Length: 313
Image (cartoon, rainbow, N blue to C red; front, side, top):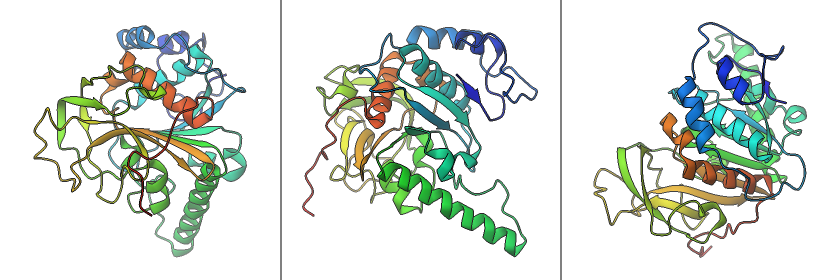
């Protein structure tokens, strides 16, 4: 069952396509309603994979979370809808979608197999407005630390964490989050068509992409120099720097990764920086990549997460 526990994101046509013929009683609705156009719904429908790359070992439940305390991407509604109906159509997972961080309380979070951070930004476990009264402010900070620990324990204990686009523009100064997600946003020098290098053509997460690379148009991130390191994670996609001018970039190692997977404790993580534009969420190749990544973090798709460059540690 689809559960909607955040402000409105879908029009009736979108709900109908997802298999919901009437608005659920628990859906919270506020005007204005229309935020996904019928033609976008049709594009998503045409782009969805026919099946999942792996058979789920058991019914899977994921939390899609899109709270923002910084820049808010207009593509969030389309992204939430696309990932939700993809899980339903393929049988790979069911979704609870929310922007209520109370879901990260340990007793609530434990019901999920994975969390998907979809274009989150900023310090998402703090209130929208920080209280000025000292005791209330302290209580908010203590709650933030509790929710942070809950997420870390969740992943370390064997669950999954996936992130799309600005999931890395979230908690820049929380080292454990940066280590789990894999990168910390440090700018977006390119918003254009770019050549993408397939770093692992035989990898199950890259099966939808040509082995010799491809071109995509989106806002392309670069990451802080102490993050997104090939010695720490399996790099899957990157800018093909042999085919474009990257002089606007500032990475000391010259690497501009786009997608990767990793292990964190007993858990698994996946990140892809594509997803600024809503068109990404009806790109068939990218959706297959997302689905494989989600199934990897759920533990249903076996995939090599050995760091690309062996560490000397």
